[in-house]
Image (cartoon, rainbow, N blue to C red; front, top):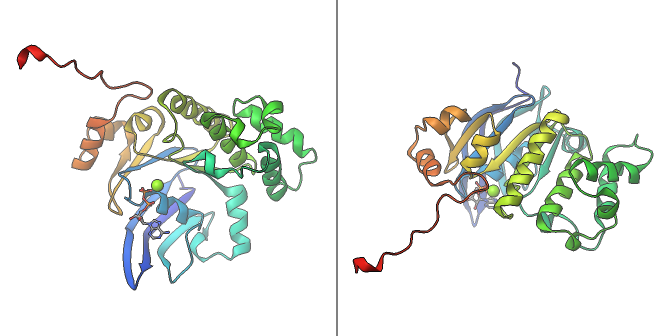
Length: 275
Ligand SMILES: Nc1ncnc2c1ncn2[C@@H]1O[C@H](COP(=O)(O)OP(=O)(O)O)[C@@H](O)[C@H]1O
Ligand SMILES: [Mg+2]
């Protein structure tokens, strides 16, 4: 099968106070149509930077330099003009960030912001409000109510659902979800993952899911890439990697991750008689 996105020899460096630091080091991977690909790794390993580079959302050179190629529909994303990029950012690839509360503008209603996204990307939609409400319903919210609500009036989980609705506004083929559940508690996390799973099927989305939760990987992703210090240290079918992790870092991650939506174990009661 042809990959939808092919990342080859990607190398990303930041220039700070005259020092160039490589944060992504020569990584290559493919993203196939309608798969769920998880990118896993400890904080600072380069997951977000890698994902942002796919949409060219990183700062310009010389502060940030990106080498290699990212091929999307026969085009090298890294060489596109701003105009071409807008098309990819709109209808091609959408991004859902970790913190829903900082992703919405607090002074506008949810409906207004989703409607703006629709107007920006889809000139053919006649009834923008109806379409926005339909999107909100699609992500399991009360569309009418949420359309008129301000971000702070929604819970964290509802805000994240609304963010996903906004990401869907441009009918993307690829949804990059960057730790979409990290800021949420376990039960809500599970619901958001179930929602993404559902949308993947109904909207035929390709999903790149960034997480450091192997419980989520096992539950949701077909393939996984494990990053550590800017490199891919392991990649393959998630089932295989969960069962037989090769890299010590992956082994450590799998050993310490609780099952999705559950705590691993209760804290043990201290046996004072032993003292
Ligand atoms: N805009 C930036 N300027 C300088 N360094 C950055 C910037 N964004 C990220 N980095 C650095 O790049 C490395 C990878 O970051 P990131 O991709 O955000 O990690 P994570 O795997 O947690 O998503 C980190 O060391 C981070 O400090
Ligand atoms: Mg990150």
